[in-house]
Length: 221
Image: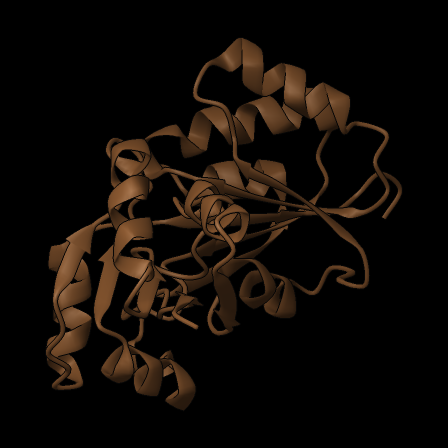
């Protein structure tokens, strides 16, 4: 039976891809990629030559019927720009549609910024709550933070560099000056992991650059 493979790809360092992921990418008939240019760089690095089709946030609903049609006869791999498709990246709708249509869906596990950041944060990782990307609007962001103010589990969130300081300020005001690990550019050349208080993170990141994963202590931790 034709299969949709959900393939995790490196979050930075290209060496972090699994042998199984490389084999699957070599064997499938088509790769559905969030950004074909970015995926092409990965494929070229490992000398993999496969047809690519774009599947991203702005065309995903239109692409699903086309990909399902291909799945009737061929295997397809779904990849995002980095990490695990469907986790703060496009993929959920295609997986759901493939399952509803009766196709086999197989996970190919690999890198993810969430456990990577947790593993080096120094904060409890036995239980955690993933918040995804924090809302762009301040009112919505503060509302979300208020909703987890009593949460005792470790909190994990993604944030863009141009909103990092605003988000840290809101965290400080709404949740208090908790312990935080600010992980920047994980596995990349300029990787940086800051551990300290939220107020100290505001002092450290005056001009943020790169991609950020925040790991924040739960209440009372």
